[in-house]
Amino acid sequence: MKMRRIMLTTIGAGIVAGLALAGCQRKDDQGPTELTGRIFVFNYRVASATYMITLKKIAPIPEGTTAVAEFENPAGGDPLVVHQKIYSFWDKITLESPDLRCVRKDRPYSVSIKLVDASDKTIQTLKTEVKSDLDQTVLPTKPLVVGPVYTANPDVFKSDGSVDYGHDTACPA
Image (cartoon, rainbow, N blue to C red):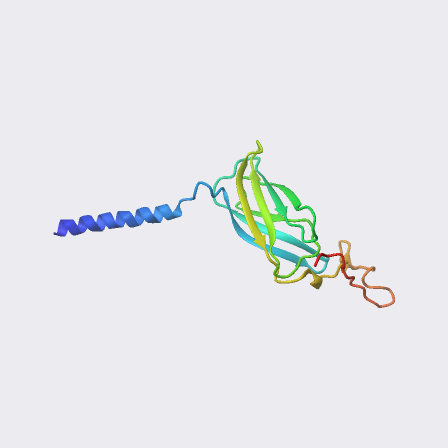
């Protein structure tokens, strides 16, 4: 009886350990990265908004890999495409779009990312959406500062003391 209990305990422990290890295994179709963050970054000082996507390396990335990110253009038209070289020693990858116009609060914008190796073979594809909790109208349309020492922008802060933050009327509804 005692031997049977030890054997069942050993088998049970083996099953639990096997399930725990299986849970830690990476799926074949998952790829070498996982999505860890996606936000819009609003920089009031220079009147810019950008997408920022972060990926975490979870498996080796081949030398010569490039990330090709396609960001939906909030102003309409063709997607904004960014090609960024990925270094195999990076643990974290940050992808940022060019400056945007017309970001709307609570609207989902699509982003697709392909990792391609040096021979242009796709090794991973990721798709996601990004929503902003702010509307881009919180930003001025002109930078508030210019130059390396953050000089007040004379197009915004007029010599007569008036201020013109601008207003972007060309955005789709």
